[in-house]
Image 1 (cartoon, rainbow, N blue to C red):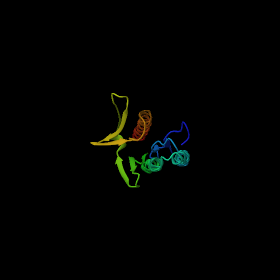
Image 2: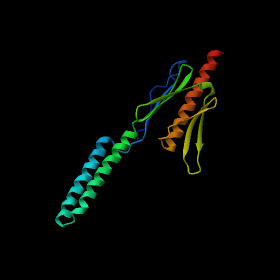
Image 3: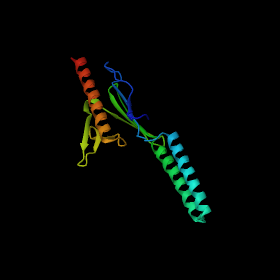
Image 4: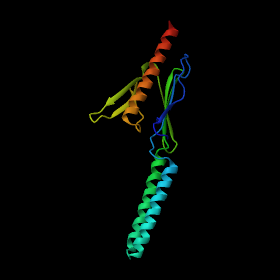
Length: 176
C-alpha cells in the first residue's frame, strides 16, 4: 500500500434506484509490503551474520544460536502478520439489501443481509479516543472494520450513512 492510500476502497457509487449505491471493501493496514518485509529480514540476518562472525572469533560462540533464533522469530512474526491480514470485509448496498461479507484470514466467508430501511450506523466513541463502528438492524448488531484505525472507521461510517440516506431518498421519491 502506498503512503497516504486508504486501506479501503469504494468500487461504485451510483445514483440509480435499485442499482449498486455502495460497494466498499475494507482491508487491514499493513506498514510494509511482503517484499519490504522480506528485505528487512534479510538485512537483519546479514547484520547478525557479521556479528556472529565477530562473536565466533572472540570465542563467544554460544551467542550465535540466539542470533539465529532472533532472525527466525522476526521472519515468523512477519509471516504470521501477513497471514492474519488476509481477511477483509465488504459492504454492498444494492437491490433492497445491505450485504455485509466478512472473510476471515483462512478464507471462510460470513454473509449478513440487512434491510437498508431499518439499518442504523452507530459510531461509539471510547474515553481514550477510539471509535467502534456498528451496523444495527432489527436487533442485530454487526461490528464493521475492527482492524481499521479510529479516523478510518469514522470516515467509513459517514460513507455508509450517506449511502443509506441516498437509498432512502431515492426509494421515497419512487414511491411518491
